[in-house]
Image 1 (cartoon, one colour):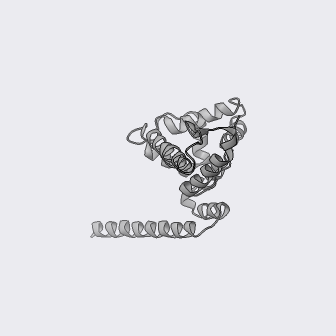
Image 2 (tube, helix red, strand yellow):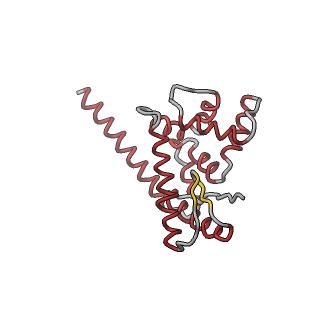
Image 3 (cartoon, helix red, strand yellow):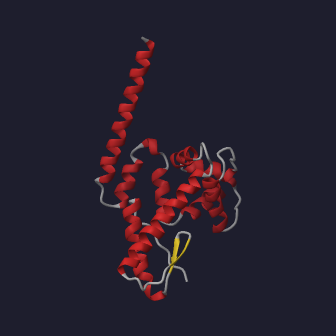
Length: 196
């Protein structure tokens, strides 16, 4: 009898989780702008920190936010923006058992995101980096560049990680297509920075 009660409780919990997921998907998919999407994400307590993480990433402010948080919590600085980029590399690409202050700060600021990252590295800590490389390749090379090339095969494009190098006269075309495709693929409009 105890087994059947335990099994029933587990099944009820699974049904409840499925309802929550369907409710979330329904609300999220019915929104029309980024602010509404973030409101939906923030309304689900199980996604603790996800809305803030998305906002920080999409705005292009993640490194600055981490820098400010690190300096407030630990009362010293790691240096400039590039050092905080290393914090993200540590979070993404190191073993779960390695927990420097910066990784713990990330976990406290974005608990749900940290749990997803940790879970994806549970069996193989390199799995997340491989997934991210495949995703970046799919988005940049096989989607954005392919689409731009189909529009105008004379546009020069060279990829460098998550960036596309092109001529100055084609910057707006490349930027526009990059924003359109990334918004469609990730669900949020990213801030695209143009360098020289």
